[in-house]
Image (cartoon, rainbow, N blue to C red; front, side, top):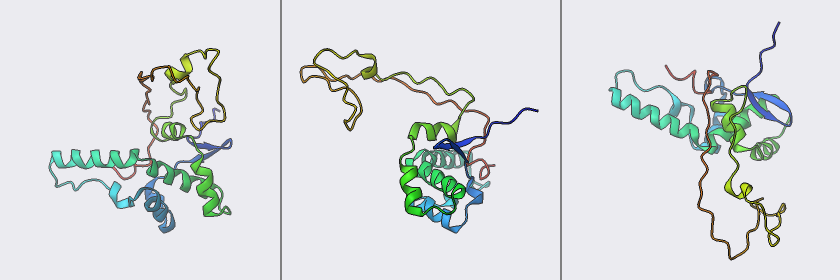
Amino acid sequence: MTEEKESGFVIDGKTYLIPTLDTFNMDEGQVLYDYSGSVVEDFAPADPRSSKDEQDEHERQILKLAKSPGFKKALLHVAYARGNPGESQSKVREIVGQVNILAATLALYGGDEVPPEVTPSPIELVKPSASETPSNGSASGGLSPSDSDPPDETHVPTGITRSDTSSPLSVLST
């Protein structure tokens, strides 16, 4: 017998199932609103009587809302709070605020068995010269180039793949 891998957010080594919007109670709906300014009804399907263009626009609006950091953080908050019912709301807020946003996005919208490779940023590809040292304590966490270096304008694309795993929005769409 094979064990199916649980999909969800991993926080401190524990997996928390991604909640779907149709399972939210009133308190969790308030969490969604507090973090994202959205309400569950914002994610409801378009009126079936609306035109194809109106339905497409409605879907674009839903996808835009679902990409917001506030929406992702609300889902993290609800997932963690459900898994830790005795934890205070302020502690839950503090913990989910520290979760890596790319990891959360991958968990929500396409966490494949093997995560996609993330290309290192240009700054990670440059070896520091004698005048440059790693600045582990800096706010950026990167290298501190000398003032004579031109700013690096190279943009490295990163991708997020989609999988067949359900999204928190899937239960509200038709």
